Amino acid sequence: MTFTQTLREENQDIFHAIFDHPFVDGIGKGEVPAESIKHYIKADFEYLNAFMRVYGIALAKSQNRDDINFFHEKIQFILNSEIHPHHNFCDYVGVDYEGLQGYPLPPSADHYIKHMMHHAQTGGLGEILSALLPCPWTYLEIGRELMSTFNPTSDHPFYPWISFYADERTAATTLEMRERLDAIAADSSKHEQLKMKDAFRKSCQLELAFWEMAYTCEEWPESVVSR
Ligand SMILES: Cc1ncc(CN)c(N)n1
Image 1 (cartoon, rainbow, N blue to C red):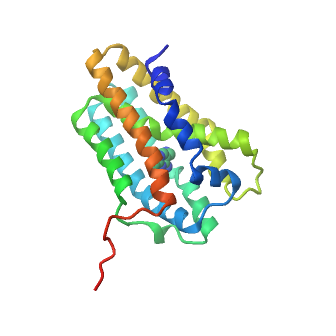
Image 2: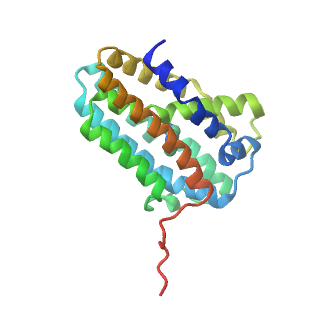
Image 3: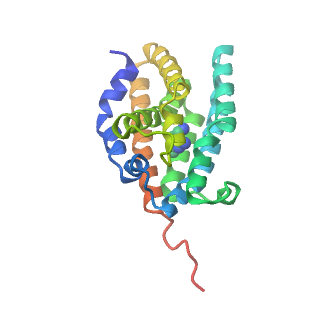
């Protein structure tokens, strides 16, 4: 069994909790509360900005042109392609994308980006890839689960979102990251592998927390200042 197959198996519980989450289920059913969608977009716009910065740190730590090219391409993908699922959500709630940008991150999203940033700053490429991988991998599996469970057609309100993540490009990103991580893990000590496992599991847990954050419109305590 490869290192990333083990990671997937050890985190089956969280993958399933994500598939069962009411926000994810609501995407499949075509019904998600508008406030939850807006909360998601506000946080996800900033989350993806942070994700690109982590790719940038990984690029700076790369030892060969293949890795440099990989991280460079993935930044382009977020900038130019991953805006499509966001536009699908914005159209659903009837708001301008620009109007949902520039907001502070709610606690769980803030935690998630600081977790990735910690591994980017203190770890090698193996640890960074372990912290990043749950992002494409959980969404790829969400897309595939929703495709097979709900069999959406092009008139489904979230068809563009579901088909984007079930698509070959998300599958290719996930596979390329897994292959890079498997190669690094094979040359790493048990201690380093444990750090990678910890980074991966926490990112899976924070993916679940991100859905809950959006669904419940999580805010910092006492964030609304009373006068
Ligand atoms: C929080 C989160 N995780 C994953 C993805 C999919 N790249 C995303 N847009 N946002």
